[in-house]
Amino acid sequence: MWQTDVIDLIAQQRGVDAYGDPVITETTRSVFCETKSIGTKEFYQAQAVGLKPEIKFVLTDVADYAGELLLSWRGLRFSVLRTYRTGIKLEITAVREINPTAVPTA
Image 1: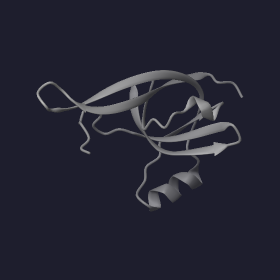
Image 2: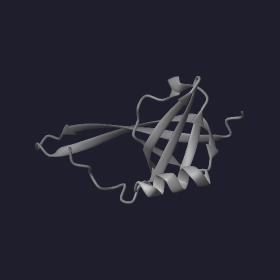
Image 3: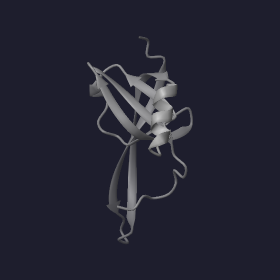
Image 4: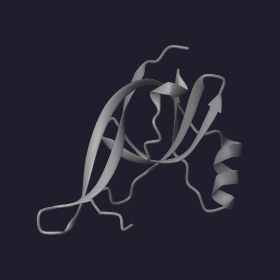
């Protein structure tokens, strides 16, 4: 399998600024992946329980993933819906973020 695409995994850290206001700091790192579509059966099963998976990314090595919950691909921002490990490979199923600029509450 050729890793022909690149995604940016986004880690978020919550903190407070000098005024005591909550802030989120993001760090990104790029990893190679293979891009796959969501299968029909998987799509409709997810829809039945209210989930809307849009795309899959397959990483060659599970060690490339450190639990990030966000990623960026071709200018679009996604939330990680699920990860699935097969051997040393890791499959990330993602859904596009509706409002990526909103600060999530903890």
